[in-house]
Amino acid sequence: MRFTKYNSMNDILAYPNMEEYLKVFYSEYLLSMFPKEYYGEPLMLAQQFGKTPWEEPFSNIVDQLLDAVNLVLDINENKTRRCISLWNTGCDWNLEHNSAGEKEGVFLVACNEVQDREKKPAVIICPGGGYEAVCFSGEGTPVMHFMEAQGYRAFILKYRVKPAVYPAPQEDLAKAIRFVREHAEELGVDAGNVMTMGFSAGGHLCASEAALYNGIAKPDKICLGYPVISFVQEQHEGSAKNLTGGRRELRECLSVENMVTSDYPPTFAWTCADDDCVPPSNTSLIKEVLYQAGIPSEVHIYPTGNHGCALAFSKSAYPWSRAMIEFMK
Picture 1 (cartoon, one colour):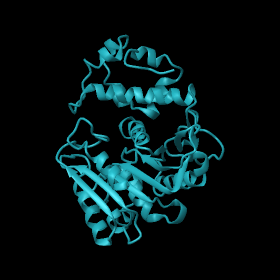
Picture 2: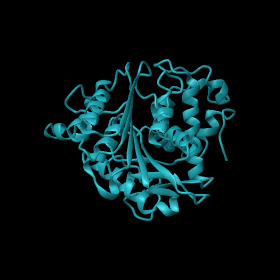
Picture 3: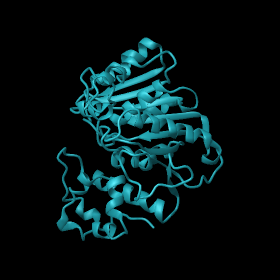
Picture 4: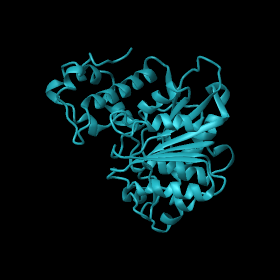
């Protein structure tokens, strides 16, 4: 079963609990943009009348919606994917366990069964959301599909956010990396080639976790998209406040520029010069400290794309994904 642009919003919302699933795998905010007078029309038509405040083609929002609803179908109907509860051993996540700040709400989206036994590199994707939400819509499901097309086993992490505070999200990512490595055989993963990829606050999560953990919980390489890096220099205040719980004494030690050492993983980072949410200086800062520590790295600052553009196919930042794939080889 699949939904396409020939289906209507009414068709989608008629699926059991779909509205609740979309709160997890999509966005109430994006859903509110759909013109309600076109709920009964095919999405292909409705997308001609929808608008976004940031002037992005509304067709991108529709594509993200279809990614989300088809992910729900893949989990519930097609059984091609599953949501592995990381803290409830042996269980799968469901809507009854959807607390943002509790361990029961933490899960890893994975393929249900690996059809081929080839060991492939793995990527654990950490969407952003200011440590207040986990934004699957643009930075999760579409990125998972893209990375799978590039030959990766891709996973998405739903980690703890507000009211949870440090070190909860970092513990969740460490748990996810350990899980992927410990189950490498059944997941078809090369346990020695595990990348973490984070966007915005998810970038801070990946960057900080790599500095805090060693051994089986440390990634082999990192990709950071328009990342939050510093909590003290041109910081994204929401991320800093949510992760620290307002404890100012944590800001210095959780600023990634103070955490990078000579054993830090190879890192690819990028941002957009016109980002008006997370200052691009955060990416310039990680570039500087990576160079000083002698870490293999590649950093790009693209002219436009603003914040939250993810794969950025409609922005000038679109080359980042190809450059990243080449760097990671």
